[in-house]
Length: 109
Image (cartoon, rainbow, N blue to C red; front, side, top):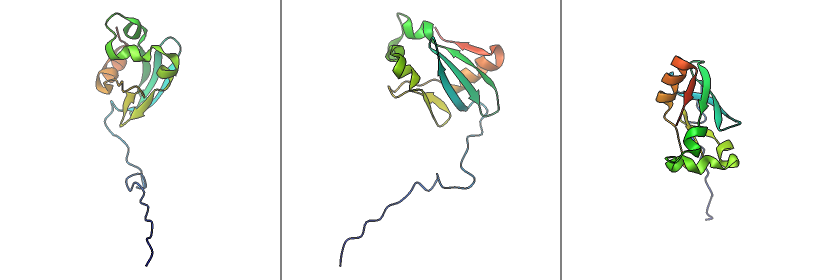
């Protein structure tokens, strides 16, 4: 008798239709722009910008100082509808959504 290799796929990824977050404040897409700005779109179609330069370059940047490297800032992505970076930094999508719905922009300082 010989050993047989068994591989399994993520069963949730194969669901039809795929699981989609439905909360309106979940981020559907994000794109890094110049000057530490993000363009975001939420699942309900709301769009806006997140301006992060003052926070990232400020004295009280804390963990956000990890994003001063332009390549790290450009590594932005999404995890379960939240904006994240490879450095372990993330943003609260609900606060972002409220600010963008009200002002079109979320300015972090």
